[in-house]
Image (cartoon, rainbow, N blue to C red):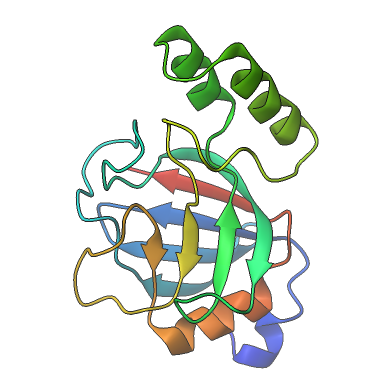
Length: 163
């Protein structure tokens, strides 16, 4: 493991979130430098499909925002919904063509996608504790570990969420 000082100087940070193991892995390039215990949404199995389903999405994302004033200590905003969710949402009649196009444009420009759609949104890594799966689809850490992760992760960091 790496100490806190080194975590603020990562060259190629990326996160791998393993839902089944309730674990976040922080990498610098291909080197695992830290693992964190986490909690998920209140319905943790399966991929997120709809707003309010309590599931945590799966797939490839990036950090689009860092919120130092989160109601859950600190938070990192994840780029959900992404391209595959936008396509599914359009095909299933959950979002309009305009919503689809805005999500696609945001992802292509590496900015915040629409957060208020029937697909859900506002998926964050945040503090608040890991005692049980309690979020509405977010990923929760203990506050001290969230502080450490928040300091280590810049906007644009790649995040992979695995089942």
